Length: 357
Ligand code: F6R
Image (cartoon, rainbow, N blue to C red):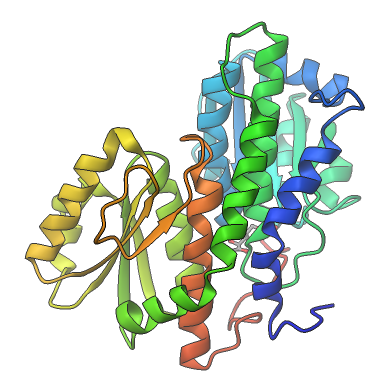
């Protein structure tokens, strides 16, 4: 039930801090230690390479998940769009583990890959929000995202939940392997949940930015580097699928290889700046588009923010920034859609579960 909320999407955006806290409690034992099913642990540790298979927003979560798993578990990971995987089959490693990331657990493109990989005898793990969904039943193992029912077609809390589960899985495996990671995911995720809460309490500010930057524009660009780039892909998808504004996420350094030709007077460009090691370069990309007339909205993180940035998110661990920086982008998409008078929860041409290939 959406209760007093005008739309499910807004409710689901607001629920994100709570979802992260729920995940933390579900994956902790009574001693406050990370606890993940033993069979899942051994299947991940036993893998010489992980292949993540997903679509849309879940694919974007996989891009972040790859970084977390490689960093904290030291297992190589490839992330693939499900609908293309079987056409462009990579050379598989000796002991692969296939991870299917799917909010609904019903996505036909993922299932197509699952069926084929099972035929080849490979191990499979589904990360899903829906217990007893098809992908959960058919894979060897399941990790739940505990985000609660997601009703709005545009995925929000499922995405942040998926990334939180990856952070926990990555650190759990790293610990079992005896890796020396100075990253406490329980503490850092709980700080990220607090940061999300600070952002959802600034809706009015974000709504005003929509007027100022997205007005009646027909297109918009999102630029970022490192993890911010992946969040740009997600921010752009959110905007296009519900507000119908043509939007693209780009790696800051890639703009000059073609896309910068599209920048005109007043073109909105949303620049994400949460990664300290690339902040100077992304700020210089922002200057390049400003010089060509772009209207740049900078969303930065405390600690590396400039006074002139339009929105600043609270500081969180550098590998968890996507959980936090996506929230203003979800809200931008929400308000842009409201202003245009479109149906936020049920955009045209889209279904919540995509059960056709
Ligand atoms: C975007 C969106 C879609 C889904 C995609 C995969 O907001 O909802 O891109 O992420 O259709 O769906 P699941 O995760 O259910 O497999």
